[in-house]
Amino acid sequence: MEHFKELFQEIDVNNDGMISLSELKVGLKLSSLEEAEEVFAMIDDNDDRRISYDEFLAFMSDPSAEFFIHYTAPSQSEEIDPDE
Ligand SMILES: [Ca+2]
Ligand SMILES: [Ca+2]
Image (cartoon, rainbow, N blue to C red; front, side):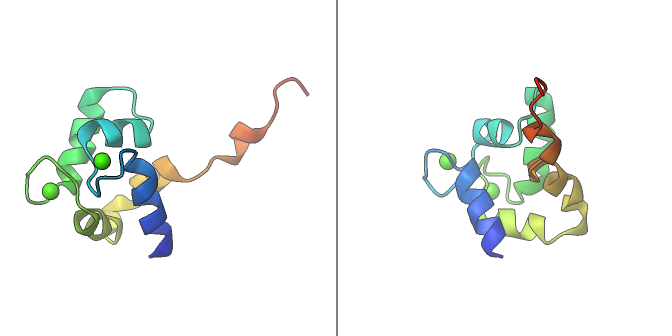
């Protein structure tokens, strides 16, 4: 659960305890707003257009969140220097 708390705080860049659509888009490095909306709607359970930590946690403990973890997992290949 520690990992999820850190991830939530990482995405919540303005530290208001809620994840907005734009924060989600940036946090998941999504290229289109449509894609962000889709993911956002899945996590925002009570439809108030904000993602609380509870909603985030509920979503992360759902098996369908696997793709989300894939998005946010650090990619080791990005650390390879193409100049070498
Ligand atoms: Ca926020
Ligand atoms: Ca909500």
